[in-house]
Length: 160
Image (spheres, rainbow, N blue to C red):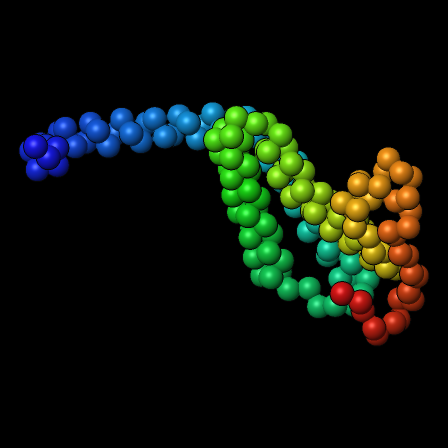
């Protein structure tokens, strides 16, 4: 006996509605648990947009609003997906550490971009890896990973 062959439209609707309700409740709980990460990502995305525009103005680059909006929206969607993936993996493996590790890497990467853009807008090329620095914090060797070069506003060469 196959449920789809003998199911009436009413039974099909009830089953689909019940399944949808259960999934929506699950995703709502996941989002409630991840709200702080979404807020942090949103703040860093807006800061990166603002600081990226400042750096582009300092370097004399043409600012295209459509590109800035597109990249910001892409980041927003990507971070939302990363939050959902990390939440689902932490539930699957019953470990909050997985969620913290994944989101720390994502937020750390965006923080590194914000810091780089902040200094680029002031004419200082700073190159560092925030993850190497965090790994070496216990050894106090993190200053070796920072490279700072001062450039003039009129320089044509821009390092990327």
